[in-house]
Length: 264
Image 1 (tube, rainbow, N blue to C red):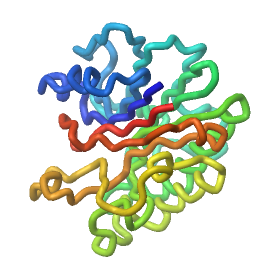
Image 2 (tube, helix red, strand yellow; image 1 turned 120 degrees about the vertical axis):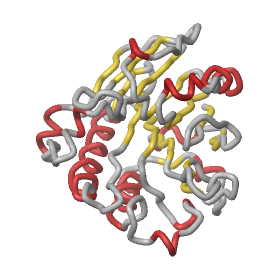
Image 3 (cartoon, rainbow, N blue to C red; image 1 turned 90 degrees about the vertical axis):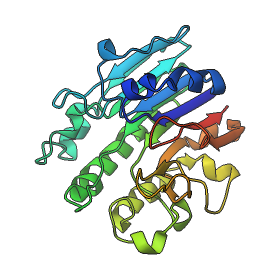
């Protein structure tokens, strides 16, 4: 089984470029987890033969954020957003930018033997004005949700986590130290996931720097491979031995991000 995650930065834009269907044909995924769809399902021109589609779009900002799961297997259940009790416990609410739980940032599907979750983590913003939301509320709330799902069955969560975890996960760590996407607070969120037993699948197979999933659209960053690895697929420890490979598909274009995948 192949699971692919991709921040498409607007599914209508990728489709208009003629690059979405070729991506599916090339990778042949069984499950596709999308982030930043920037559309509601009825607005999407994509209609993949053989896939069921489940969308969670932003309610407070049209054309913003959004996640989706396309799957060949019909899920036993699909859950949308952060559970209300967890959101309340961690104080997730409107922080001036909007309520993150109204931004279509999480969708979870029960695939029978495991949960698969597509997540688009809030960006801390260039001036770090959303860092406290991210560090103090979102990250611990999301981890609490994943641990709750894991009590039922193993979890695979994937998506744009908007952080480079280690110096190997971005081309210029010293220059970006303390900046958004590479603060100690954001990186500690990944630390907590790993301490809770979730496995960064890419690092099971590949060590060192030079492999990235996002590039700035400026200064030919992608051509020069001046990038960041901010798109991840994490699995419960019980599933780690079943992961046969984990890849970054930096040869696939259409977004400022490229897809990442695992094969079980």
